[in-house]
Length: 78
Image 1 (tube, helix red, strand yellow):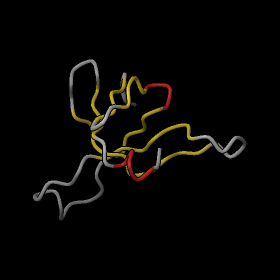
Image 2 (cartoon, rainbow, N blue to C red):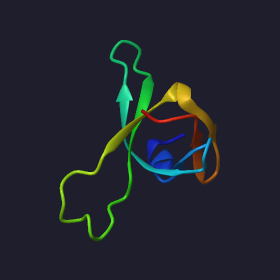
Image 3 (tube, one colour):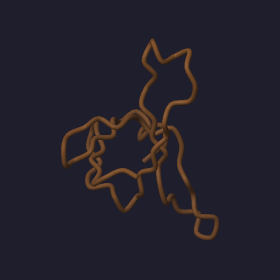
């Protein structure tokens, strides 16, 4: 699966159905070259556009439950 396709999917927390955001980057292991985590950010809202950085959350690959057609369900987010 291409990274650009994964970036278009919504990240949803399975426990409570909360929208977490969209993937903006990936964390890669230097030794293996495998993706270890995705970095996720909520889309900026209009009023927050002029403010500072949005919070970035890390979703470990091991926390991903399902990758569906439109969403990715995860266990929890750190």
